Image 1 (cartoon, rainbow, N blue to C red):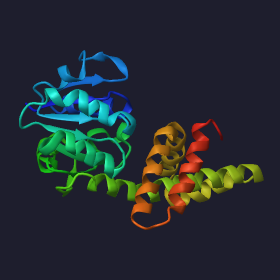
Image 2 (image 1 turned 180 degrees about the vertical axis):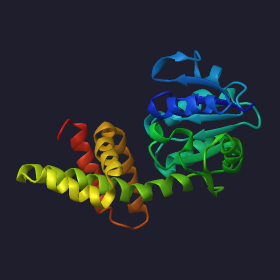
Image 3 (image 1 turned 180 degrees about the horizontal axis):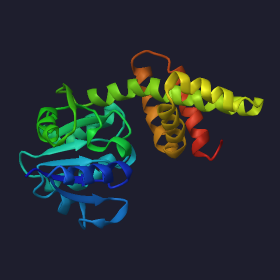
Image 4 (image 1 turned 30 degrees about the horizontal axis):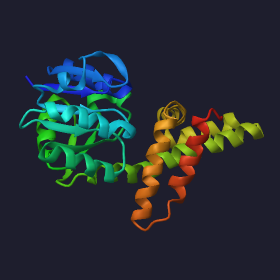
Length: 245
């Protein structure tokens, strides 16, 4: 039986933990932000075959520093947070050969363990070997930490850009009295389920997605590309995070 420790039991981590248990894994959970589960990160990690850090970029390093002393030899420490490649490389420096940089490509609360994932870093192959049989579709990108994170951010420029455009155009349509007409037009192009997900997700996860798009903008600058769409998307999300329409 594969033993999995899930650090972070919010929407995404909680769904992954439940799905892993249903798939036959032995799961221990700890949430750094909420009382409950294992009494501390090291208690959850001790004896695990693979550790999944599902928190935020802001606490990813602190969670790793707290958990890694209890990681057994041969186990995998996988960081699933959406963050900049540079931070993933920092975490790889802490975890060494045990580290896997994992990027989830889809809404985890909706798709759970079936969410497609990219993995890079020294333990990417081991991560795929452990999680694949339990139901997670994992594509190994490379052995260099940060490559999976970079690919996700490049994808996010498009996905969050489309979401920001939908939010802004529908706000304008509402002011013009044409919201119902425009929503039908957008749904005809994107499909009603995707449109709903883009609009609802932009509001529900605005704070986290601002960080994501700021990281994407930084990556584009490093690549020599001016981040016009990424920066504009971050601006729309920041307004939503402040409670704007």
